[in-house]
Figure 1 (tube, rainbow, N blue to C red):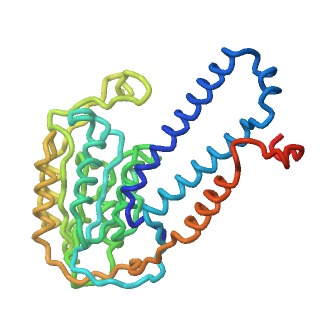
Figure 2 (figure 1 turned 30 degrees about the horizontal axis):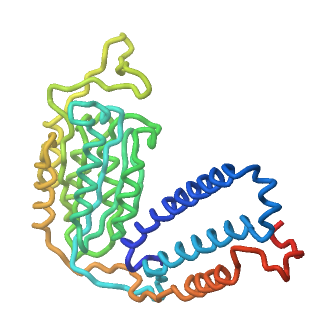
Figure 3 (figure 1 turned 180 degrees about the horizontal axis):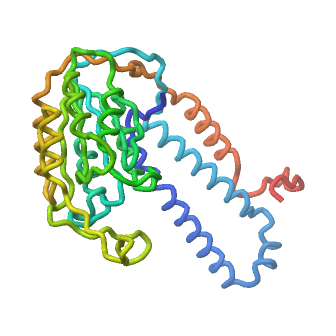
Amino acid sequence: MFRFAHPEFLYLLFIIPVLIAFRVFAVIQKRKAVKKYGSPEILADLMPDVSYKRQQLKFWLTLASVTLIIFIIAGPQFGSKLETVKREGVEIMVCLDVSNSMLAEDIVPNRLEKAKQILSKLTEGLNNDKVGLIVFAGDAFTQLPITSDYISAKMFLSSINPSMVSSQGTAIGAAINLATRSFTPDESADKAIILITDGENHEDDAVGAAKAAAEKGIYINIVGMGEPKGAPIPIEGNNNYLKDNSGNVVITKLNEEMCREIAAAGNGMYVRSDNTNAALRTLEKQIDKMKKSEIESKVYSEYDEQFQIPAWIALFLLIVEVLVLDRKNRVFRKIKLFS
């Protein structure tokens, strides 16, 4: 496992393009100054010891050294010991609806993007808990197995879109059943499913799946996305909306009754999302109420500093830069190393 001990110092790399820009500017100004005195070809014969290629080489050697020094300051490290760490936490499986109806814009910017924002902020607030991610439409798929790797969770979130599931629809029951099977065998930790959907279930018995999960001690918490009055579904790539076989614009509505039934069957709570962070705060309070227990995680516990090789390379480049003179050595002028 590789990391930087002080990644904030990597911002110093922005100096590199600035130095290159200054170098290019200085070379252009120098050439303009030379042209004032005559033809550069004629003047070159009058200055046989001047070597522009040596000057260029010295600049690039210095630039490479500065780059390596910045990496050294940032503290490159490699994890050397994988260790099992026990922490107090809970297990959460997130089921995210990615059906086309989640593209409706009755929540800004749309239902799906708002759901992703809620999950991203929720993940940031987790500490020692485990989280997994399932996406579903007409079928359900595990996007991220349950893990304590929150960075991966946020990475997967950013790439989610309706095209991930080819079968359209809203199979809430299938998502709950898959989530129920995705938890670890540990029976001491509280387990919860966070279901984010507009509740338009057309595929299966979601209430029955929620009851089966509750019998295993798994809570079902639901976040309803959208407005009960509904909104049209925009089609990506143009300004049109999805229409039915009769040519009428399809209006997708939040089915709050269905969401409440599923939450009640799963011994959980239901909250409707809007353009505020109220739903997020409610979820966080619900997670805080859950009973935490020891959860095992594999982490790198020891990191070895790996600055030695970059340091030796940087030192070598600086020594070479010092040894390379701006002008040609008269003794070795006949040797065309830089021609």
